Image 1 (cartoon, each protein chain N blue to C red):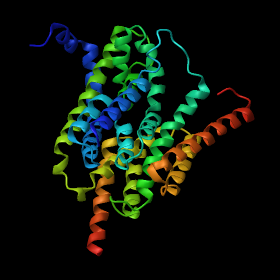
Image 2: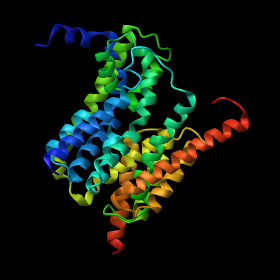
Image 3: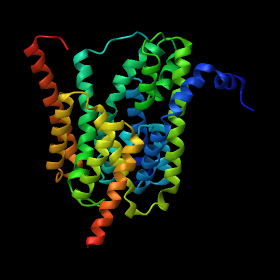
Length: 108
Length: 242
C-alpha cells in the first residue's frame, strides 16, 4: 500500500469512529432519534457483521474447510448464548477448530 | 510524579468503582484485542499502520470487518462504508450516553464518546440506570472507559508486534471471526434482527464471487431494505407507533 493510501485509510477510519461514536454528543442541544430510525440503526451493524462473518464460515477459505469452521462456530455460538462472554466464545470455538483441523490432518 | 489532577482522579471513589467493575470483565476484551492486533498484521498491514489504526480507530469489529476488504484491494469508499455500517451501533450508544454527558464541554463530550464501547456501555447502564449527568456518574463512566481502553490497547499493540510469532497454521484470523460472531449474536434482540442477519448472511455468501467484495454492499443494502420494509409493514398492521 502507498503512503498516500495508508494516510487516507487511517484518516477515513478515524473520521468514521469519531462521527459515529459522538453523533449525539456533538450538538449542544439535545435532539431525539426518531424511534423508527433507532430500529433501523439496529439492523445495519447486524447486517454488516453477518455479511462479513457468514462467507468466512460457510465457504472453504485459507483458514480451513467449511465443515471445520461451522463445527467450531456452532460450539462457540452455543457458549455465547449460554454465558454471554467473548473470551469463552473465542476459546471454545478455537478449541473445536484446532481439534477438527487435527482430525482432518490425521485422517489424511 | 503524576500531575495532581490525575492523582486526584485516580483516587476518586467513583472513578475507582468504574475501574473495578470493568476490570472484572476485562479479560474477554483483552482476548479480542489481542486477536484483532494479530489479525491486522496477518492480513498484510504494516506494523506502523496497524498500530496507528489500533490507537485512532479503536473499534475492534469495524477493524476486523475492514481487514478482508483492505486485503482484497477494495476501493476506499467500500472499506469506509463497511466500517461505518458496523459502527452505526455506536450512534445508538451515543444517543444513550448523551443525558449522562451533556453537561460536559464539547471537547470532553467527544473525548468521552471515543471511550464508548460495547461492554463499558452495558456496565454503565447497569450501575446508573437513571441518567442524572452528575460528576459522580461521568467519573464512573471515565473509570470504566479507561479500563476498556487499556485492556483493549495493550493486548492489541502486543498482538501487532508479536504477530509473526503466531504461525499461520494456528488460524488466529479465525478467532477474529469468532469474536465478530459473538457481537452478531449479541445484536440479535428480536426476530426482525434475526431475519436481517440470516438474509445478509445468505446474500453475502451467494454473491461471494463478485469482485472487490461487492457482495457485502449488496447484502447489507438488501437486508436493510427488507428489515425497514418489515418495520413499516408491521407498524401499519398493528397500527401502533414503534
